[in-house]
Image (cartoon, rainbow over all chains, first blue to last red; front, top):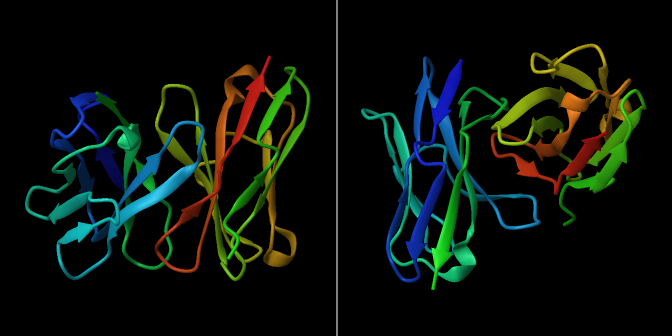
Length: 114
Length: 111
């Protein structure tokens, strides 16, 4: 069984400031890791994922996350945020054997202030 | 390529009534999942279909919930009878492998 903890329920930052959204997981088996984003009044969109290979993964809109197996973390970072990044961000984990269910964290609401 | 679609987008019903939610997965995706987010809580897994078979239904809360995927294409999730605690957003996702793609969700309100 897996579990995910997102330590911050809300993160307010100023525009153009850096941000880190924290995610820690626990699992007795090897895992895949995901970040999903939900913009206001929209559905869940895949932001980035770690399946294998390089532990640093990037999204097309400037976010990156690093899989750290020893610390069981998959923190999401962006060096300079924009107003349009305002959204709720969800970290999720699944087992790595075939298609399996996702276990989600509680979500982090990122608010960007001008 | 069309994404995952869900119908309806919103549903308001009274306690005791029946509601049926529909999910159309991405064409060719054998895996279909249902999840639910109750207000203020995390998104929780309900069940997983592989084609028309239920692979994992460990997250179904009780026998008032019935999911089907006849023919291995679209899926329905019926709640009968609905209770107040069933209110929330119901998400459907599909995948061909590990990466799941989500629909916009159905927001259900039981009064």
